[in-house]
Length: 137
Image 1 (spheres, rainbow, N blue to C red):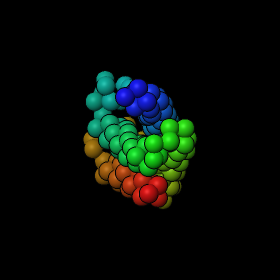
Image 2 (tube, rainbow, N blue to C red):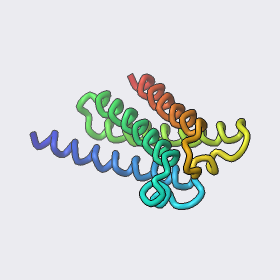
Image 3 (cartoon, helix red, strand yellow):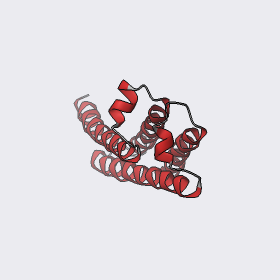
Image 4 (tube, helix red, strand yellow):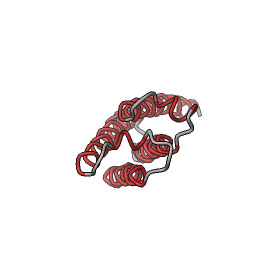
């Protein structure tokens, strides 16, 4: 039981760090402060993009943990590496969508009205996460 508890704490720390980094990346992509957009202005676009990133990171980290085969050190390394890869690819997908579509995606994310581009970007995050999760197996 103690080994499981230690593993849970270690994976939890890595998971929180990856989610915090994901938050920072979404904050950089949106004009203004993400915390104000979501919690003060109740912006659905910013919330959807953040949620999709958090779900994506969760999918990747969970798969890396399950695939670690009871080797805590290797599992932590895999979790960190695959989590970072996921965040990098999600960020690149955001930049790619922004480059090939009209307007600035970041501006659409700060709009108070739900924009279809947010759904496209959010779906891309989840698909990237599922692809990385499948590659882990």
